[in-house]
Length: 250
Image (cartoon, helix red, strand yellow):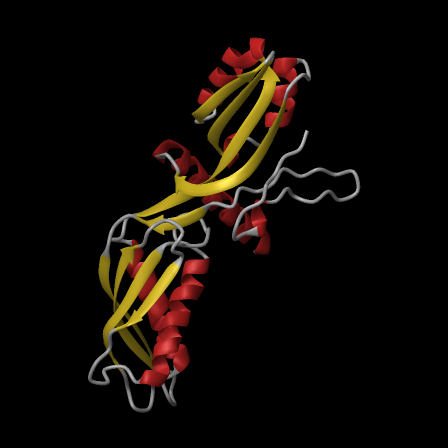
């Protein structure tokens, strides 16, 4: 049986490598995105005796089409933020997005427009504006309706015709969508789109369902929203894992 995990843009969808005789289940490369818009301020101000830190930015955030990744637009006019600090704002947004908001997964498919802000002649710096941008990102997430995305796989199964009904029922139970069927002699070909998370143990399950008489191939197709019930479980598990890591550090 051959299983294709290839994807146009990320190697993280490939099977987890084997180490000695230990097999690890592949981690699902979830992503985060937004469904809504936000218009927020990010302000960082700190005084430590000598020079302080000051950065202030206003951003608008909106969703982009699936696969668009990230877009940054500088709409500053009149010098409310000096040009040399603009890249620091973009960098701060990207660094915050890399760690997501809901469950720690990278944020994708959103646009940020920097349109206003303020600075201090002495206390402003690239670091201050980067930190201000991170605060703006977190503030935006409170309003922009963040959501989880999951990888959807193209699956093709080749099996004896007599198993077709059971296989389609099983795919439906895995949140799969049947995309087509074709019969050639005594062999049934079934094509479907199924969330990657539902396919981790499919090889063993398929063998059991068909007495080892079926095979399948699978490759990445696109990302789509995780249903809320599943999303709640993923977010809860991520928070629990983070809490566990923090307790170990202590």
